[in-house]
Length: 316
Ligand code: PYC
Image 1 (cartoon, protein in one colour):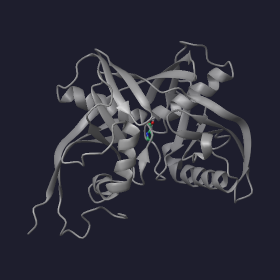
Image 2 (tube, protein in one colour; image 1 turned 90 degrees about the vertical axis):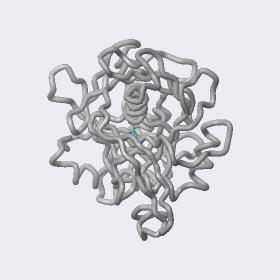
Image 3 (cartoon, helix red, strand yellow; image 1 turned 60 degrees about the horizontal axis):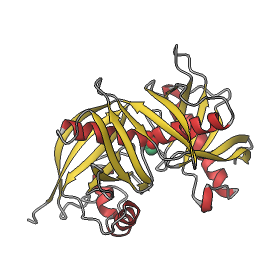
């Protein structure tokens, strides 16, 4: 029998969206910047990615976070986020999950936590009440009110915006954003994504728009909006999506509908809430997103190469 590779992980959820942090047993990534390390991860260790987040050890909804040594002096850790289909630029709920995991391990305390990510430095504050607020990368809208024709004949109008990942944001219109409708919301946003691809509508530099966000008003007192976010691997975000909320508040600020420092409460389809604010920055709007994560498990995954499903279902 071959000795299995042991991978120590900590699982958490942020507003219902799970994060699995890889502590030990992961690949040592080549590169001095986090962007180089993400490329190395994607090129050389895609099987490892799949083994950690895909079934039978994980599921389509799970986001993985591989910790690395920091890129910058003074940072607490480097982190590369990944999911069931590949790498993520940034991940808001994952950032909150990583900070809570580092707190759980005693590696950080209340106050400032600095994480190097492939899209830049993300500074977070671990608050006395356990909530984590992170200052996201500059977020901005590149296209307002672009129309797309879906294969079913509908015409949908929305905005293209960046919040650490690329988003298409559109009103849900008459479609209720509710848990009992996630099947039809997933089907609808999947068709939007396909239409964007057909129409060759992209983010800056031809970047794929791999997140689709529908929004509507919230019925919850004190909450501004409710959303449904389709993630790149076709799972929906159980949290309000940190990068999606960043893209949303950047659009609102750009339209003069959200003042600097004003609080925006964004609810997810599951009812979890993030609080967001923006400041004007030199390259866009600088969102601060706050939410809470909870550690749900500490475990050691076993990767046995003799197991036919060692590298996960759908492994490359
Ligand atoms: O919270 O930014 C986020 C996120 C991206 C994909 C899943 N969650």
